[in-house]
Length: 120
Image (cartoon, rainbow, N blue to C red; front, side):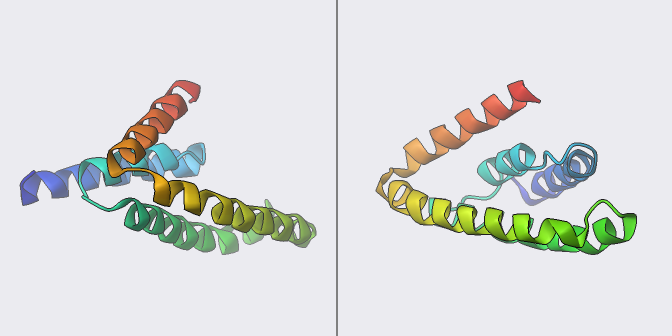
């Protein structure tokens, strides 16, 4: 892909992804498609990029959600518990991901994207 095509694709994905994340909180599959199609990343860099992207995106949403009243202090213990569960999931998934070939990883990601698209 040439540079101009990548920039146009990034703009299209950004607009669709922005709408998807605000309307349905479903940016994940769109970001997967973008990262798999445009950016050539190793599986570990791919997962790290996704994690950093959503960390910053969701941290940016926190003040707005508190101000709108859709997130209250009573949710903090649940958020902490879910955060702990996600860390345990990451620790369990890392050895599995490292044992996969890159081709199998991409196939699995595409299958997850297809399944998510069907579910949406």
